Length: 202
Image (tube, rainbow, N blue to C red):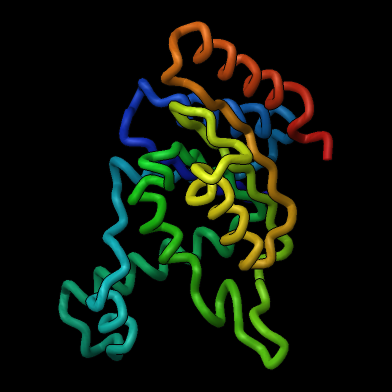
């Protein structure tokens, strides 16, 4: 089983999402030592944003691409290939300004590809990634679950992966991390209990 582990926080060792996503992966490996993990750190090895240059590179024949276009095309191909090859994806997704980090959005734009991860049919869009499992590690300084302020974060990610055909999606959540040391400790402990207990029960 191939597992793709994505981190997007810019906070390094101070990141709750990094800590918890790592613990999810460690728990998964403990449950199934045969798991093959591919790791991508979107903060330290940032993917450039989807742009006109991306489209130009994709539309230029391989032998006609200049160095910049070749790099852009290779980046898109490698990022998409990692996602397509994965049976499961663990994503550290902190909330930044009511949405996901720009680094994570750049990755999303590279894997949401018509004809590869979804397609349009006469009956409407069809996701092509239905066999994958996704675990979102959702962290936030405030309390946003079920609130309008969470629409651009967890709700956006649920809509996105649903669009790609992924219905096996679980959320490990730690909220209110900026409400003081006691709340932060309690939220992380609750997330850790979820990881240790029920995460792989389904």
